[in-house]
Length: 61
Ligand code: FES
Image 1 (spheres, rainbow, N blue to C red):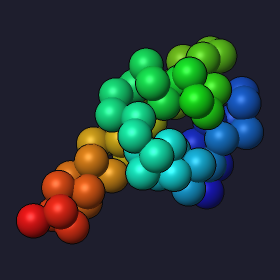
Image 2: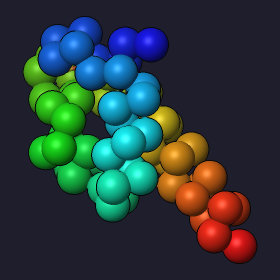
Image 3: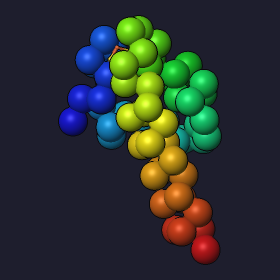
Image 4: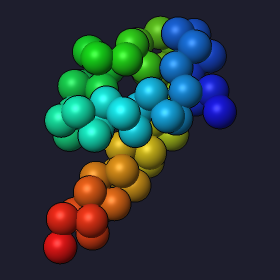
């Protein structure tokens, strides 16, 4: 699903960025371009990052 319409970034691309080591909004913005336009997707992007980070912690345990 598209999360960021300004830059055509999907939830899978955000998840991949987190999987590749991005661990905050700034690093996901740098790697995917999400939330670097109008900003309306910023909160949703942060929620997806948090969910992905939580899954990483659970899978690492
Ligand atoms: S929808 Fe993501 S920056 Fe505008």
